[in-house]
Image (cartoon, rainbow, N blue to C red; front, top):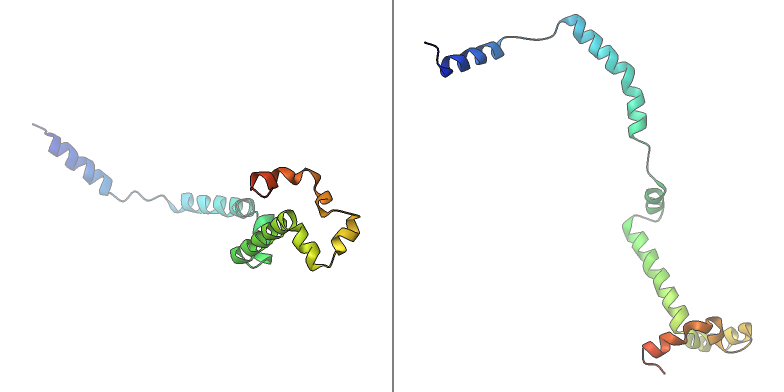
Length: 118
């Protein structure tokens, strides 16, 4: 009588046999791989994008974050402190604009109201 254990033992014995491909098959597979491989490497590695190149130029993430902070700081100084900047420049900003420095951004009055400045 054949049991499940005998069937399993027979399957394991069959799996243990040396079932390597022949030398001809191995040569054909390696030749095909050598023919296809250079094209795949070039397509898979297109190189760094514009953001990665810019990040490297600016010194990595610390340089990029410093540039972002400087930009936001300049924007906030330009929006909220035009009178202070005009005072530091001895009125040159007013002379350039021909009057009130609030004329640089005429629709900015809602910000002064929302922050309780007026």
